[in-house]
View 1 (tube, rainbow, N blue to C red):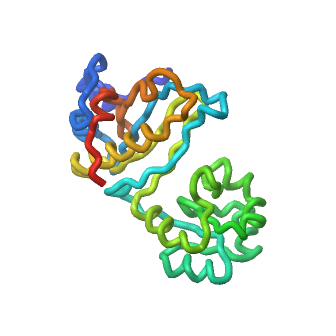
View 2: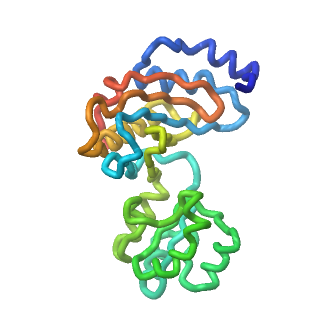
Length: 239
């Protein structure tokens, strides 16, 4: 295991590794011990009571964070005709409607954060699986990123406002950003509450026993702070 730096070790000394913190205390501590020379992302890590090897225990969904992520989200939409016009008017940063745009992505251009498609473009978008799939950018029904033209304004607005996608990995964990360390604690807490509530509601019917087993919050460079899962799930969501 690589040796941790001095600043990391100093931050770790301020964390009680045996304690389950309340959500507010944990998020405040993450802010207090942040030491990087940039505005770090605050991340939430869940350990879930599912077996991802089984199709009926997959956990996937999206949450719209009330205070966003603290960064500009670049939205690309695959659409043509009237749908292209709707996407541009709704504020999409990029709209691809022809083979030239598809070829540009095939050649490696992925300068965007989320990709949305209307159904009649999927015959073209399907060619991009090898490029977009590994980056988590491929539009899909499960992610809610293939929508009819009339839903484009809503989805584009949500994406820019702070829509995050989550998907359980092969070790039954979720890793989701909720903002920046520069956010006031109250805003991080609001985003955290919405995310936890959304994850809780995504529990598959086949999951047995405790669903959300562990929750840890951390900044990009900092140590993890354990959160009491019971307190986390009892937070009031008012958004």
